[in-house]
Image (cartoon, rainbow, N blue to C red; front, top):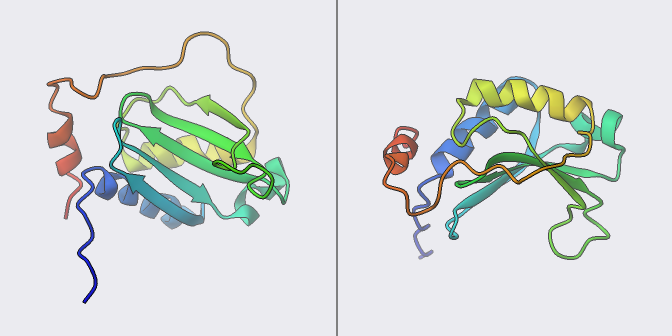
Length: 142
C-alpha cells in the first residue's frame, strides 16, 4: 500500500493555473507544489510552446512563492545542476491572480524573453501574515 500524499495547501491553486494554461493551448509539461517556508511551486511549459522565443534547449517555468507571487524562470536545464534556471524575472501580478489572468501573463512570457529588471524584489506578504491567505487558497480545493 502506498503512502498517502501529504496535503499541500497551494497545490489546488497551482493545478488550477496549470489546467487553465493547458486549456488555452499553452501546454504544461510538469508542475509541482512544495510545502516549504515560504510555500512555492513551479509550472514548466512544454518546450514546443517556448522554443520560438527561447530556443529548443531552454526550459521555461512559471515560478510561484507565497510572499513574492509569480515569476518566470528560464535556462538550460541540462547544464545547470541545481534548478535548471539561469534567469528569473518577477511578473508583478500579485500572489493569487485568477487562473485566466495567469493565462494572459503566460502568453506574454512564452512569446518574448523578459528584459532586465532593476530595483527591489517584489514582495506582497510574509508567510506569517494573518491576512486570510489560507482561506483564499482553500477556495481552489475541490
